[in-house]
Image (cartoon, rainbow, N blue to C red):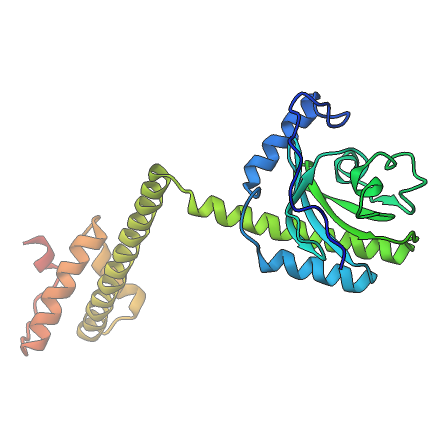
Length: 278
């Protein structure tokens, strides 16, 4: 199995890594990379499964999920290689993030874009490279999903579509990870706001329950009024309602009094509305 170098040469911070490093767009892109907080994180099975699947689908020895940093290309997942990062040399991933489109090198030894890249000129002997950028919802290219071979080859339209779909799966996993990070980083104010909302809904629920209990008492009172005066439910409700504007308080008291009297076997021929007036 081929191996990339596990140790990187010292990075010259003054080196112009590619045509985008001094651009305001690159500054914004790096802010997006930091927002996703993915650099130097532990291996993740969600990404490892995608690189393994890509290697098997395309029958290539190497598949990588890369994140392009300021002076290096870091591997979130790497199938077929041991190295975890390489320097940010132009021609491969550093150039692939310059466009939203698939980046294809059929033979790196004859392609002027890649002739000087250490992975092409060095011991790895990279010949074939295909990558699709990992594009965020707001349009920033974090890195790539790439496949690599030591033999030149071509990529069919169907294969290109498959690589694009796999890159989309990588980006979906990154978005899910970012959403989980945001939830875990809620600050104290946000947590207090959520607690206040919970209390508010709890209070509303208790009030609703009390209202339902009150309605049950009113229902009992309506039944008694209907029986005593031999009237229908609408007339009974109007009779109760007509003597009070504070419905939830006064009607509940009437209901409680009348139910209590009824349960005690109390019988009276006087107008029960008088109890509300007294």
